[in-house]
Image (cartoon, rainbow, N blue to C red; front, side):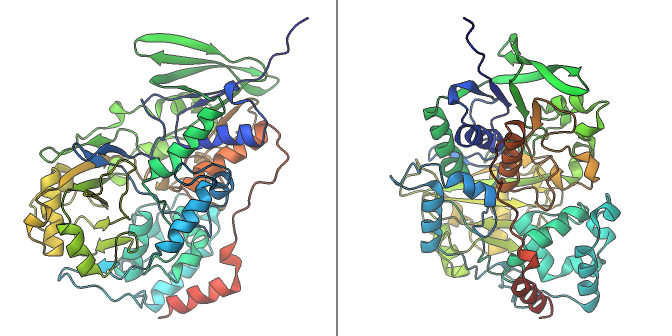
Length: 525
């Protein structure tokens, strides 16, 4: 008697998309965890949702994810069923809601000018021309907009408004980025338009994104028997066309110096995280600037480029990875062993850590922002240590207080620039360890593109293969969010496994008359 073959699922890339896809297969598709394998080239899971280090070497995280419980429908659908590691009997969603109920965001120093004065932001600073142009952009047809830039729709004066400084530093847009993506953000986060100066709609996890989102999910998946294959670089996929359908038949892996091929049998599924916003990232130190890595140092684009060649349904990666100058910015994580900096920031801003959100120095040549999260920000962080994060959108510009571009600065020079904007003495950061991080592709998903440049999660004509990433096409949703990766994962899994369960729809806040009215009132202040 032949034993029936049990289908396997292979997830290439260990970011939040793959972790979420594995969870949906188990929870909603009844697939045994031991039949799921996640192949990751790095030694740790989480992808761009990272966070690591200790008080001795310093902590580091490339980004900081802001969440919202008014949106992020698929993310919370998932995390309502993932147990908390910190609160027995509660889900990650439960603990996040409770935490944000206790530490509510209400920024009192959202923008700071060159005089170190808090900028009044009761008005968005719009002229009538700005309002007309913004309305025209927000109502434009995406297909007609094509690959246009934001600057194609808005006049130069718009980019000097208080609204622009707050919106772009919250979401990391640049004037040359996609007008379509900017329009989608205006609709998806219209609820935030009327409270952008306080960031009252922003929610945060208890700890950094790795400890609060990745680790609980990874722990749950491990308990279900999911296989984590680390230090495994996938270099190619064997495939064939069968009945007009694209079918993956093998996965080519490089493990240390050994190559191997995993056979993909009939009934097996393969999911690929195509592209990476943090590919070719580099880390600096207090005494050295991050290395300037480029596409030749990249690992995250090659496989997608191979697959997309001659297959327009698999998208066009060159639309996103062809201009580092337009997709690069730099972040930094600061570890402190005394309270001097936090004490002075509390006094200056009027916000306790975890309640203020971003503080943006609007006249900074680098357009620098910092955020002081609730402490501790890492699970292993000692009580006498504080950690904060910051970033700058223009690392190629010479600083106001340091006569060189941020991209050429070490951690000590970044702290000097920061203290200059705050008018703090350098001894305020005497104990600091500032770790800078250069990310050449961090806003690559915002690059101007056509709808056809992004594949569907399950491309047309694909039988056992799907994409999960920030570089797939999901109508109405917005990239550069945890939600986009989780929604892509849920869509791909449900389609390939034919799961009869409704995916949570995008909440149409932009269709609410109340939200529209509040946004209109805000725009005319």
